[in-house]
Image (cartoon, rainbow, N blue to C red):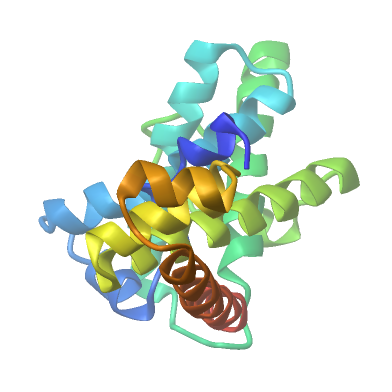
Length: 208
């Protein structure tokens, strides 16, 4: 696993239904912070790929979060509805707003209260952007699974898994570095690997 992937380890990007419900309360600062930490990188990177500057991409992140705050009350948790796709379309439409404002002053302004839901739902997302978003969403699932795993297991066992699997060190080196037997290293790898796969599969089936 690369350093770029490892730096995402603290984020639990896929949202839970309970969090989506709480986001309807704009005074729930903790939930909004959690939402922001889970999703801002996906939104920001998508905006950059669609040609925005760093500053404009940061503005889009804020606009998307504000748009979500306006619409989350009407968003009902539905396992058959893709929150991932909904968030992508919202992001894409906000990026297009920036381009339109530059070109001819059209689109919703950042502080506008106009209802963009219909246009957002109909927005056509470039195929290459959707493919990249899907790939980064899978990375998010991995990081969410790792964060969950770290909370559930003993710290020393996660350290074994981190060195052996995430950092790719040889079993003997992990054994020597941590002062545990080779047998323990392999047992931990097997047990935590199984737990991680199960958690990722659960997140894939229920991403929100």
